[in-house]
Image (cartoon, helix red, strand yellow):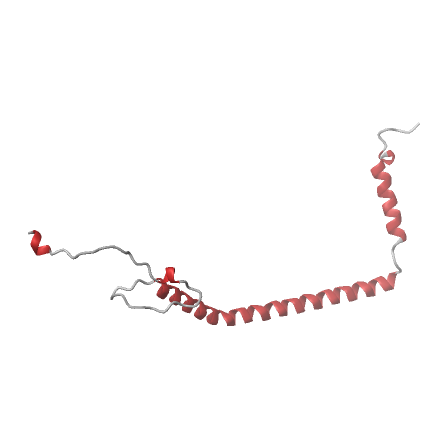
Length: 122
């Protein structure tokens, strides 16, 4: 009779034993695996070095482009401020930019207006 507490009766135990046997059978010969391992590590090292160099290269390109990008964004902000600025001096006509329709260009309140004489009130 088998002991129910024996771990070898467990399905997981048997699966682990089979996995170990397959792993032992799949081991390649000694020298070839050492050379393969060495070349694998060398290839991995070279790929890491190349990746690091490429990363630094793109970082330097990004840093070099920052002043140009900043200048472009500054010009765009100045243009937006100029477009949104209100005319204080008077009603000067401004040509609409391409893509801007007439309703955005001028907003005029229509109606009858009369000037009051402030001296007549007092």
